Image 1 (cartoon, rainbow, N blue to C red):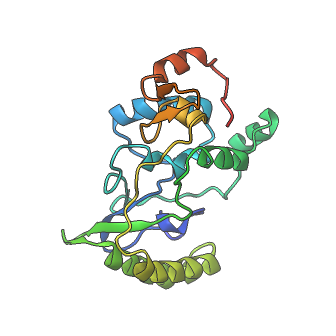
Image 2: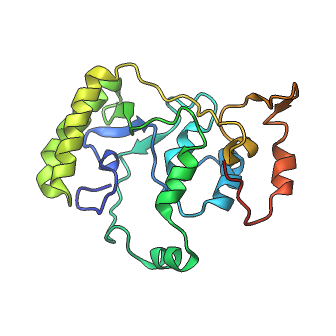
Length: 226
């Protein structure tokens, strides 16, 4: 996003000099998703339409997710509406939906959900591929440079400092496929790492194989709670 946008996540601010940056997080506002993958994760959207929480997990539900999701800096966009405003938030209140609870519920379905949002590589506009260290350092410098022009300068400076530290402490980081905790909604939908689940009665079930049965058994608006 452009520096004059209303932004919730500073990792999404456009970084000059990059074509794209590989990330473990993509916001749901303006994504391009391969149709075959969209079909895979569609059951999640049918039950969690707010966009809160789904964007924290969807880049890591696929097998081998490293270098398969990216922020495209070459295509900037501007977000002109102030955060947490608009008709959709009025509908949330009317329908009794708490987006923060959506986040808590969805992320709690996995035992290896990362606590932070990372960039870990990218492509520069000159065609050169860069690794995680250079990507983070360039991103940190860009955030510091644009801090006085963004809506939340203090947060941009803080994120810049975090990225500088992560350039050294998170070297070699790659996102891994999320592991769904047995019995949670995401496990029953077959989303995340495919695993066999021991139910404790000497019976082993294959979560992936059970997916179609589970989907047919869930009502349109039903939710399986952990």
